[in-house]
Length: 283
Image (cartoon, rainbow, N blue to C red):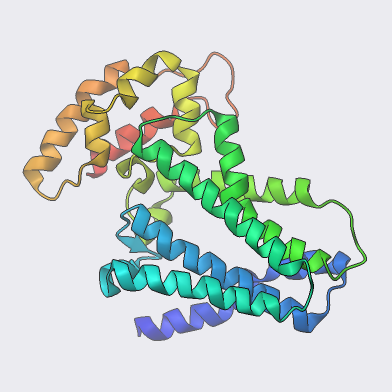
């Protein structure tokens, strides 16, 4: 029954997934046969990047199912994702435009540079500024939007600069996802509770909270710090979970729990503190 429902959902959502390209094509007037190729390229690239993301983030769930590398193993998943990249390249070549491969290569470089920064900040306990994070998002998440529209514009007479629009969409998509990771029940069921926190990742709400109270940065970020350790530990036993809760509780007095005297862009309290409290009661 679950498999039938999943198949039905995939069929129903298929038109939705390609709507960005189809919507932009209202202005670009791109040939439909080539549009389908570009939709396939971006979908395949997106799915391949999720496979690698799950490996690099040590994720356990993706869309409420076990991640691919927990089923097939890391070597097979990495090989599969790399294979998809070359299948994509093969599809781009069928577009038969001298600049198509150049654009595809540039966007892949941007995507991997963004992912590399995201991983570096996490593994080296280095909190980026909000502006640095936004720049990374435009490389990592916005790159897929840019690839689809960039390829379409190669064949279109519409040459207006759509980058500001695409950048806004990319930032909205990622920051909303960051917030949902801490706040959405549906997100928790599809992945895991506050996954960005348990991975030690610097998402936008966490970065905003840290730089709102810079004096807390040392407490949170020093390698070996008890709070940092908890975020990178897997609490498999009840005893370890209880121990982690005590460590987190001891850190709460040092975190920015009080609302700002003026409204903040995302909320009036520290997202980091809010998510930490949620984390305590759901471990």
